[in-house]
Length: 321
Image 1 (cartoon, rainbow, N blue to C red):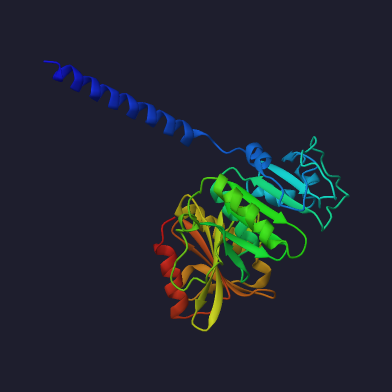
Image 2 (spheres, one colour):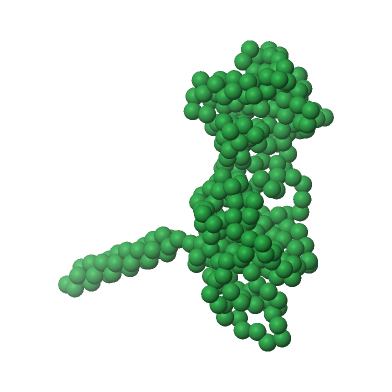
């Protein structure tokens, strides 16, 4: 009987194909998208030409690309940046780019050109953080096919995976910029959704698109690091809730005391019903409450005593770190 050998051969063939398919899938899944491959894969839209290859910057020379903003970008984790500029195409133009040339610190790109900045932030959380810092407010947004972007007539900005991307162009170039943005979104695997980064923030009464992350120096204080922020509707009033995450309750108490010392000239007073928290008046942002809660320090800007605020603090204490 040859049935058994044939059956065994069929099973072996199926198993071999499964192994080969699995290996191919693993190879494709493990193939990372690098800053270089992403930047060099982009092509200018109709009417523009790639005269120069992308220029690349690291933390040492990032100031040449974004003079004055490099420290902030680096604080959010920016390790490298690709900068691309496509001028308008002349009557007859070649699309082949030449070698990259770094822009001069004093020079500014023409408003008639398309400019692209792609920052490798190292991790999706960092990319979300730097995107959210500038777009935690009412504005115009677009869906890029599963990724939100802040848009204007001459700009599109978004975070995708570990990359933060800014596209700028002439007025009314938004359709071309959005098409480029969608190409980038398609090329880069998605990272965790923003809600995955914001589990420490209460959800109830949180105002849309107000959540953001400050890596260091919140309130201008060098010890206020890793701070999540969002705005909340509390009764008739809007308040801003800041949550700094610490390793222990003792560390939270110590940070609150440092905060108290920094504002001692503003006569901080004990928080009603809380022996460890305090409030003070700030001439620019109003009344502020500072409360250590377990392994967190919670700061409420726009504080008013009452049950709604107590409920917000209780919700903050109950959230995951």
